[in-house]
Image 1 (cartoon, one colour):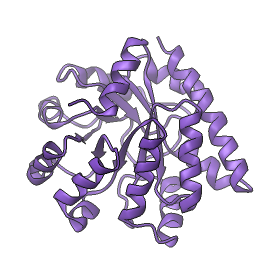
Image 2 (cartoon, helix red, strand yellow; image 1 turned 180 degrees about the vertical axis):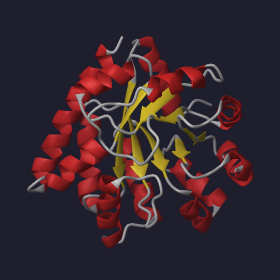
Image 3 (cartoon, helix red, strand yellow; image 1 turned 45 degrees about the vertical axis):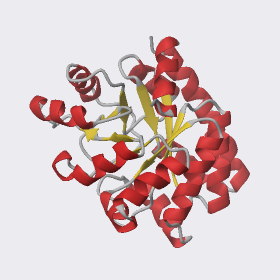
Length: 267
């Protein structure tokens, strides 16, 4: 069975462009503000949304996403809010996935977590700190509830390892474009295109590049070789720096429209 995520990539492939994927933590900038931000991003032309599960010890996240996660956690965000945000995104007509570290999945219950993703219209889960060797129970659960297990690869991942990881992945392969933590950068690493071409030798799955994109021009560059362009910190920064909620929503909407043009100009 195809998930909404699979259908998005079929659509973008037919349109000969990359998909635009936005990231926002659940409960940020507030519970109601998160729902409004999701709707604004969907209305502005984003193809898919990653809902971040705020976590107190985020090994992969840069300072911008950490700050947003702290605000969210202070607001009391928990699993129910993550699934509510997922439902908001899937109801807005975009493909929706959750990005989470493994600990919250285990705490919630592996099977129950996969079921809740499915029940709320989610297409899959990105698990940056879960290795394929430790994925037995998770892969059973994602298979049972027909959601995609999305794994992260990096420029340091060796070729043999890439093939092992992509063989277990569903939906798309998440290619981290640079070594290190997330965050908007002035230029997107050259390692990214090399990594994507290496990944494509191992799988037919779409490959999406995350970490660093913040402008239309960068989106265009990445869309030239990747199937999806993931943008998180750039949106979060606008929400953090906004004087009020409406200014934040207007800013992310304007950026999403620019990036949507960028992903269409890459080929």
